Structure formats: structure tokens, C-alpha cells
Length: 297
Image (cartoon, rainbow, N blue to C red; front, top):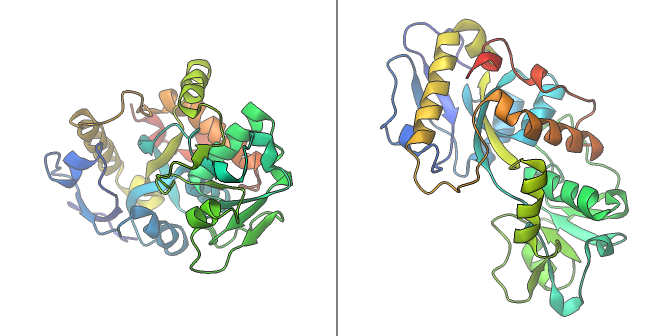
């Protein structure tokens, strides 16, 4: 973490290339108050452990689940009401139809693969399976490849670690796993079906009822930045807003900007994270922000 923030500070920033961040990254949206050094890895999630375990970045994106855990375990970051990525998640649980049709509740008593138990996509699709389709998540054995981003966290008892180097998509295709929770890694294979029936229409129906687009990543800053230079935090927020306004190719339905607009979605993430044993205590939406970031609008 940068220790003193005088003049025009340079902040080590972990931020990937998205439609909504492109204008920031390519310089169309710039600042005279702060320099953002985009020094994070590709993909950006490879830097999340370094952020929450080693304070390696001053600012950047963080998975909402990782941030909730970071807050619960006292890590020095505060949230900006600025989603960087998000999408509907109903299509993110798949299985191979060659091994028989599966309804959501059929995964009870079976092994389901997921990269890490605390992966944000997994939080959302598990919550959908539980609250929309009655799946008892405790009756599923979650087969994982790695641990979460927070060193303090231990996976629930109904998780097992897969051998290093195996492919969860391939294990699902081969029938070694009954199903898999996958985002962009879902195989483009004609045998793959979504565990949620008619997933696209199910997502539309869900949005019509809930009015929430599940958030994947949001922007965060180190608490010292906010304490020492609230003007810089407000400036970063301005840059994010302007970058979003210049974005092309953003889905028509995308997580909104601002605290009030995101309150319900963040609350849902908190509720489901507690329910799925991802955070050790209930958090409030407002404690995720400080006086500076909570007043951004």
C-alpha cells in the first residue's frame, strides 16, 4: 500500500479490460488528481489473493464474495458503489445429458465441481438452486480445485479437493462429476445442458421478480486512500462513471451504479454468503462503505 498520498498519487491498481473500464484503461478518461497504475495480472482475479492477503494493490476490482469475506476478517479495503462486472447466473450449472436427465434437486447426494467453493459465480448459482428449486446445498459434495482468497477461511465440511491439474469441465463431460458450476468455462458441447431448466427465460423471470442483476466484481480502494484523500476516491468514482458512459457492447441489463441502486443486490449477496457458510457473521450493507464511499452518487 502506498504510505503517503500527497500531490498526484500513483495508485497500484488491479483492473481488467471490460467494456465499462475500457475508457479508463485506454486514457480517454483520465485525471489530474490521481494516476492509476494498472499493474495487476491478467486475469485480474489472479491478483485477488495478493490484494486481501498482502495489501499489494491500492485500488481495483474485487469479487463481491471476496470483499464480503475481506470485510468480515478485518481487511483494510472499502467498497465503492461501482460494479465492474455482473450477469445473470442461471446458465452457469451444467451437466452431460448422456448420463441421464438431471433436475436441480437430483444433484443432492452427488458430486458437483466448482473451481473454488467461494467463487462468486458459485455463490449465485447455488443460491438460485436453493431458493428457486429447493436444493439442499448441504447434501451436495462440492469438488474444488483450490482454496479461497482469504487465508482465514476454511471450506465447509461437504467439500473435497480434486487432484491438481484435472479439468472440471472434462470431468463433467466424462461423467466423473454429476454437474459443474462454470462461468465462461462451460464447454460448448451439444451434450451439455443447463441444470436450471430453460435457463435464459428463468433468468428473465427472476429479474422481473427481483430486479437484481447478480454482481460479480466491484471497485474497492484501500482504507488509507479514503482516509487520506477523499478527493482522490471521488475522482476515481467520477472516472468509473464516465468510463461506463462511454462503454460500448454492455448488455442492456447490467448492474447499476450507486449505493441505493445496488443495495438490494449487495444485501442478497450477503444473505446468500451467510447461508452458504462463506462469511462468519452477518454484515450490513452500510458497513461495507465508509463516509466517503457511502456518499458517492
